[in-house]
Image (cartoon, rainbow, N blue to C red):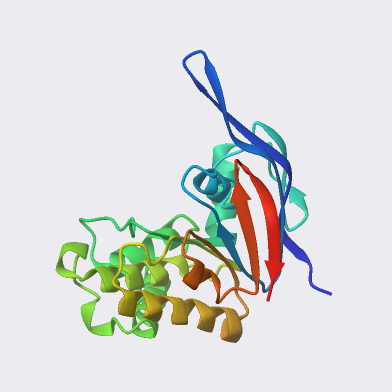
Length: 229
């Protein structure tokens, strides 16, 4: 029986904007199990970005609980959250979020620094990951010297730096042409099937979501429908 990796129970996130309170999430319930490929879909303003922050331990809820490997993390401080994130979750963002002044290999090494991994081990692992994504010949290039697809592959390599159990991909093909986007999607499927990674992909694209085993539809800050392939 598969175990729950990330579970959100009645999660609310409320932002105060002047005198107005905005509920970005309204009692969100979500259970993501080990080894699943889950797509979270929803229109603009549905709460997808806030949901990513909760699932990825980037923020804590206003109320409700978030469990990571059965541990309630909803009350942890930022430094504790950062350590958990670094070990457990790899992030792939639509905007790539690479550090412009660092080379590809330095970008991939970055998450390992925060986990205290020695420099020679960081260098070796980063090189292996860049070879894995087909960028062994671009290791010393900075993001401005790489195409959008190459930058996203660096971002994928970086997401794998600490061998996380969970890959959280937020609109991972949003800034890519269709062919490059398909290549990124193929790589995520490979990680899922061959490495047994849990993949959580947030997207508004129905075609992308088709590769997932399990689709959650988000509207007005809560899940309104779930489907399984």
